[in-house]
Length: 335
Image 1 (cartoon, helix red, strand yellow):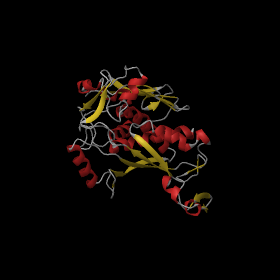
Image 2: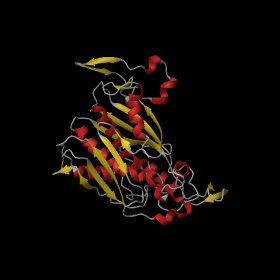
Image 3: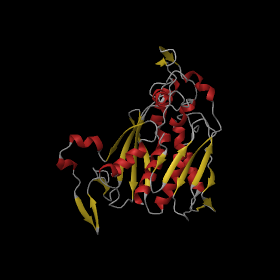
Image 4: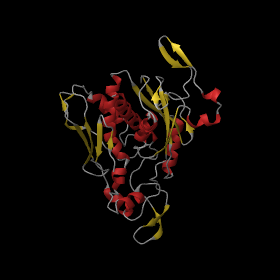
């Protein structure tokens, strides 16, 4: 497993979906940074489970317990370690999966990699549950970036092919669609857009050090992400250069572009325009409809019925996770 993010600020995530706790260690945070833990709790609540009909009914408070690194709400230079206790696990729901991998889950590939010793309960350390400690680090990164007038905001563009219209976080039409598939034991995926405002020009590097590479690498640490595009993305493949190019102009002493097809990144380096990208989130693979699989012990083709509590759509809870890993990446690059 590679649970480590960053080099200047090193973030290590630990735990499994059904372990006693999950957590994060943040090393090399500058001393003296004040953390608003009320604001952090509000951010964490956005991804917490069991809050509505379109998320899993596994109810977890996701209360943060800081073990080190904070004195009087300020960083003290020591590694910041925080945990979230797992209080509502039902490991028995996974007994029938020990030898039968779930389609589109990590069960089979993890079984091969770890010689059958992987933790199957709730997906083990492949679970979306591990995005909670990521959101602790990301929520802190967002607060530090805000002090530099940099904001990271994500929103739902569509779910199940239905455009998310209006000013609501999630439209009534989409909620109905999710409820419909939930009652049928199925699930939906969707598209999330993230916009980073306030990043100055000149951040990033070329080739493997490009800002796109760094952001993409962090984004794919979130389970269920299957695609990413920057700016106008795949649409640019159908345009002429004269249509796709973004003309430069002076806004006072600042160079801007009249359009932002490049999504705020040129040559792997920030241009000073808003950084814009979209990600594709696959439908939740844990569905209650009977599926085809294999029994790894008996080497037979079998039918699988998945038990337990699962999100009919993980897109809404993925929104703060996208913001979190993006904020972590931008903060690392800013340093």
